Structure formats: C-alpha cells, structure tokens
Image (cartoon, rainbow, N blue to C red; front, top):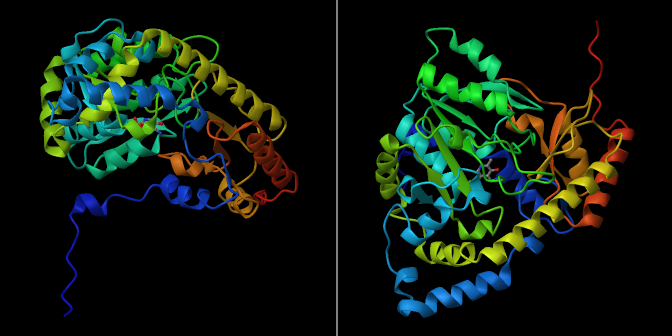
Length: 402
Ligand code: PMP
C-alpha cells in the first residue's frame, strides 16, 4: 500500500548533511590517507588507563554509580574535578554548580542553540566556522552572520562596526578562541577584552567553544574568555581531544541565569550523559600525575606532527604555523580546493576544502589539513601528493579575463 509522503518538520528539513561526514565515508576506503577529519591520533588514546578506570568504577559500590541513571547535570565528582581542572579550560577554580556535563561539547552547542535561538534570529559566528556549530545553529533556524577570522582570531573590530546598526542585536556570538577549527587562529588578549566589553554593552552571550585548550605547542593560550567574565560567557570543553571522543564526555560552564535552563533542555534531549563514561573520565582526570604526563606527551606528539606536515608542504600554498590544536589552514593561491580535493581523492588523499566552512565569504582557495590522525609517513606521503597536484596545476582556476 502506498501513502502520501509525510513532510518533515521545518527543523529537520533545514539540517544539511555535513560535508565532513560525507567525506568521512570516502576516507574510510582502504588506502585513503586522510587529512580530513579532526580525529585524534589513535596512538594518543590512553587505552590502558581507560581500561583500568573502567575496572575501578565497575568494581566500586557494586558499579551502581557507573551503571545507574544519574542527575541531568552530571556526576558531582566529575563536575568538581572539572571545576578545578584549569589545564583543561583555563577558567581558574570555579563553582562545580556552574558546570554541566554534556554528551560531547557538540551537545553543549546544541543546548545553547535550543535555549537561546528562535527561528530567524541573527547569530554571529566565526567565518570560516566550525561545521558542527553551524549545523546545530541552523537547525534551530539561526540566520548566521559570519565575522571574518584572521591570524588573530575573530575580527572583533568588524563585529563592533556591525553592531553600530541598531537593527542588528544578536543574542549569541559563537567563536573558537583557541586554535580555531578550521584556521588554527588564537584570539588575542586585546580582542578577548573587546569582545567581552561588547557582550556587556550590546547584551549578548559569547559562546567560547574550547575543545583544543590543552593542546598548545609552545605555551598556553591567552586568558580564557570565561575567566574574563562569567556572566556573559558560556565556556565549552571536552574530553574528546585529550582522552577519547568515544567517551562522549564534554562540559559547559554557564552563567547562573542560564545554567538551569540548559539543564532542563538537556533533560529533554537525553536525561543525562552516560554515567559509565562520566565515571571513567572522572577516574582518569583525578589521576593528576597520569594527566600531567599524558597531556605533555599529547602536546609534543601533535606539535611534532604539525611541523612534519608544514615542512612537507613548504612552498606549496601558504599559511601560518599553528600554535596548537589539530589543523593547518592552507591558502593555495589561485586554486579551487574543491577541484584539488577531487583530484586528491583519485590519488587517495583527502582533506576538507575551505568552502565547507564558509559562512559569508567563499574560502575557495583555502583548505583545512588535519595533521592529527596520520603518522609521520602518512603525512609526508599525503603532502607529496598535494604538492605534485598543485605543481601540475591540477586545481588552478583559469584567470578571469580583465
Ligand atoms: N567544537 C569544535 C571546535 C570541534 O572541533 C569539535 C570536534 N571536531 C567539537 C566542538 C565537538 O567535539 P565533541 O562533541 O567530541 O566534544
């Protein structure tokens, strides 16, 4: 029997599939050398320590804490550890009550979008912008306004100019201030101060999405936006890049006027984040000697990989060396990186073209290259393929006639 098709809700119809997810299907083909996903290096997963943590939490109190339903805002033990884990977020000692454990920081973005965005609302984002944020915000009907990102992060001066128009009153400004995805940029201290001042003057919330906080190379990033202000800034963080994304344990720290609303929204979404994963994360985070050593090893490994890829690409496109995180943002002058990607995939190399992150600008000659996942040989091979394609002009855009 055939019936008429049932229409999707407007929210679902608005949700484009993520270019990265579509690409990941290609990158799973055997032999593909992928610079595409922001997937942590599997060699950095603390497998043994996680296994020991799982045994501990299942063995203590009959495993009840780890296996039973839990409070929506998360295990008190984990929130208390997070409130004092300055090396993971730079917030300084905080009240554990301000923290909410989320199912990855992605869920934190979604909860904020659900709590603060009505269809048609302007929401300010980095341009280029982290794709997952774009998806969550657009699903809630946000009208995204991209503020350009340069080597020093979001151009807060451009935002200030836009805000001079009385009709432009966004409620949310979303940025990745540290080692931005996709550019790797770090927002300067001056711009941080200016952004927080604008947030007070014009009445908006700054969402500081900071999953790469602990992965700095030469020195920690500037003072966290949430350390400058705890009434206008929501700070997001995650165990994904420092322990393992499979745990799906992230967090948010919200101002008191917003925190309980976010908890109610989360309750409707998933009741709570996996208690088993939270208990495992807490056991590992409580082990300070292990975490100190593990973070230090991860930082050195990612710093080394970033140098390997940058050196292998020398003279092939341009871009500033990242100061942390997982990405190289490369400008292939005069090239179309979507065409470059098509040619690269034929040679079993994948990356994400700049256009995937575009909001109001096109970024067609840029590409995000992740150095996190491949080993040294893989990075060198992938760079050699890109170099050869660029040298052969595989993606050169024909000059537009004058
Ligand atoms: N924000 C940014 C900027 C990211 O790069 C990522 C992961 N790619 C996330 C949020 C989501 O991370 P998770 O949900 O695993 O914590």
